[in-house]
Image (cartoon, rainbow, N blue to C red):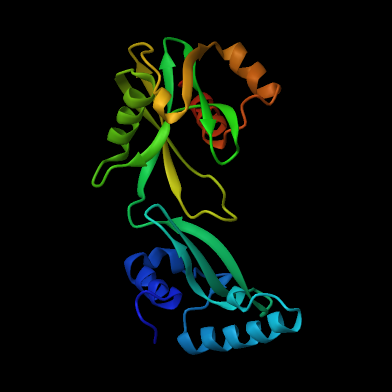
Length: 232
C-alpha cells in the first residue's frame, strides 16, 4: 500500500512487530481500526473536515507520524463504543527503547531521593532512580545498574513492587518498580543533571508529599506500593 518509510508503511511494520499495541479486547472498547480500506475512508473524511476549517490536512494521516530511537508518535483511526469514528495520538516505544525500571533505594529505614533536573519540565524534582534497559537486560539488572550509576550505591537486596503505567491517556509503556536495600550513598551522577542524593525519614517523606515537593509519578507510586507491601 505504501513504502516502508511512509507513516502508513511504518504503521504496518509496527503492527507486525508489536501486535499487542493493536489489541481490541471484548466489550465496549475504543476499537483500533486496522482494515486498510476503512482507514483510507476515514482519512478522506477527516481531510474534508479539516479543509473546511483551514486546518492542516496532515492531521488526518493515520500512521507513525514521528519516530526516533526512543519514541514513536502514532495516530490511530479508532471507532468509539457509540459507533462514531475519530483519531487518537499515542506514544509507543522506539526501536531502541527497551523496557526499563524504576527503583526505590532504601538506606536502613530511610528513603533515598535524587534531586534531579528534568528537561521536559525545566525544573528540579525529588525522585527515585530510573532508566531505560540495555538490549537484552532484565528489569532487575536495570534497577541495580541505575542505582549504581545515579547514586554510586550497590544493591544488597531487591524487592519487586509491581509496576506502573505512567500516563494511560498518552503513553503505552509499562515500567517495573523495585525497592532496593543499598550499601550507602556514593557520588551522584552530575553529568545527568543529578545534584545530589539524600536519605529521608518516613516522616520527612510524608511532609514532602504533603507539601507537593514530590510530584514524580514513579516516586509516588513506588512509595505507595512499598508501604502497602510492608517494605517500608
